[in-house]
Amino acid sequence: MPLDAEHELATTALISIVSLSPGTLCAELSDDRRSLLVHVLDLDDEAALVARIKSRYETPLKEIFLCLPS
Image 1 (tube, helix red, strand yellow):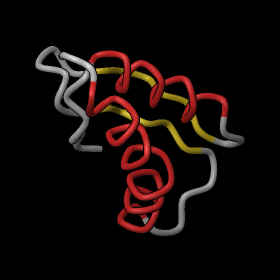
Image 2: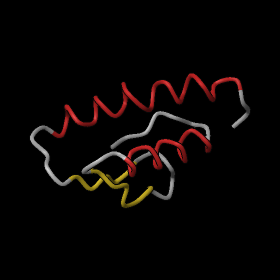
Image 3: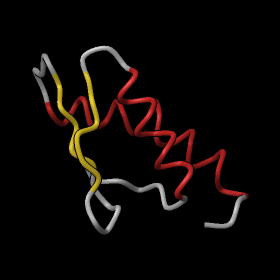
């Protein structure tokens, strides 16, 4: 999953939230911190899951951490 969040704490929070969500686990963060490998137990539509994670979790986290320095 490509990441848009630039703040380290936003990325950390996103990893925790996704891992705590039933049926998902963050398996790896890329070296450049721009993508996240998410293990999913029951996946019907990859694009829909990525869109849901981005809209439900990543976008609000980006807004919360917008005012903090990276």
